Image (cartoon, rainbow, N blue to C red; front, top):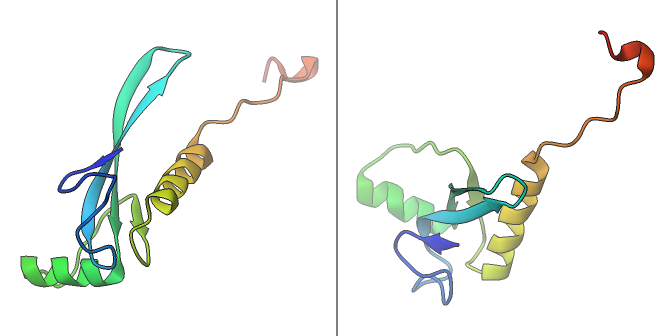
Length: 101
């Protein structure tokens, strides 16, 4: 995991005020496929500062995490939980009478 403007460890200069894109390198050992997934992570104060600096009235981002302050354990937990919740679940085997449906 790495952020676009600071290192995951030790984190941002101000743990209570940041807004940045987080990149997560992923690997599927079954297929050998690897990719990078991104998320936006911010504190409320950091988001407000970003909006002011960019002179934006609003912002939209998919895959966003809001945290009270930067804590790498919390960020890692949030990302892992999100990735696991969106992981495709295997379907139960079909009953013999359902195989042709």
